[in-house]
Length: 419
Ligand SMILES: Cc1ncc(COP(=O)(O)O)c(C=O)c1O
Image (cartoon, rainbow, N blue to C red; front, top):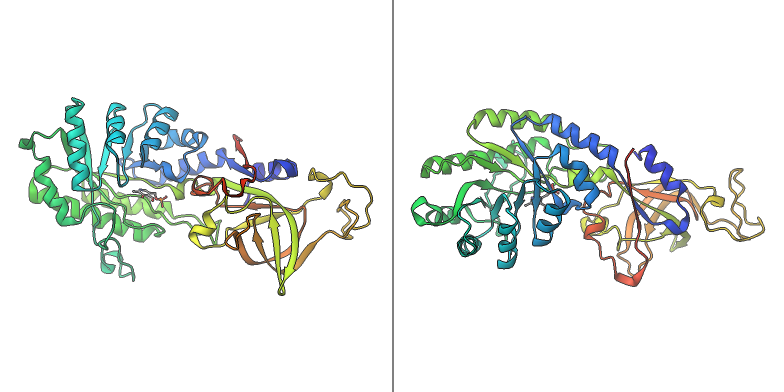
């Protein structure tokens, strides 16, 4: 449900101020606080900056998170500057020598190592830079079977993947990290991020499988591992924007897991489930037409700003904000001949206001591609040219994953609401 602050701004902006991303930072803070409160006190909550690295978002989260997961040299620089002093965990495949060197210079707290080559490179760069101790977690691509997931018909990890090390490869890396190897790298623990979109019981089951495996590895080799990062991927439901990941159940499950592994610090790094609900992409309907018997609404903007529905192949949830068109900034016409007959409708164009009523409509953007679809065949009570549409769940993997420059349309506005 759209928050009152976002709704007010969404209807006050002029048509030319749209599209706009509107973030409710007060709602984000309240959500992050609730997430933190649901988790056991000893569990470390990192935010995966890739979900939404906007400075206002990173800073709003700062009081509620232990640190940030970053996945490129760019994210290292950006997050370090935006939230100085916050611990960083640097993950992601294909880290370059330059990125590693810079991350070491900036004192990045944890490195998630993705391969043997990367392990050797990091040790070599650290030695070259004269850095005596670097804390690393090895990322493992661990097979987790369906029966470990409570019998769910799911199996995670273990498939061929460019991410992380196979379990046998983790074992092969251990000599490179041993105390007598002379390596500046200190193996602190294990990292895994095996799936995204899991509900709370499945997430707990995956976390348990990772922690159990890490504890056995540690015991077998006398490693004394103290950390397990079980990744992110907490599920959100784009078909039901008011449903949220069950953080209370997850927190309870993780508390039980922590009791089983008293020597291990558990860490998670969600992105989407922390920020997706705090952002809306607000736009207006420019055109409405029928083609082949189906209704289409063309909105200002499109998937070059909000790529999420195209990448995830879903309908982006939205709410129609009906507009008295006198407010849209699109006036300038005289005459009132086209009024649709609604008492509050001050449509001033000299032709009828295009509208669809009580039928499914497909919302598309302004791009010249049939892929520019934000939501398909969604029944609406009424949608008229000039009405506003607020796309929900646009606070994660939205603007920052979009192909902004395609077709050179103007960029959206950005509004960060504090209250
Ligand atoms: C290693 C790693 N950690 C955390 C995340 C965050 O995942 P999500 O936003 O689904 O929680 C990702 C996402 O790709 C990831 O690759």
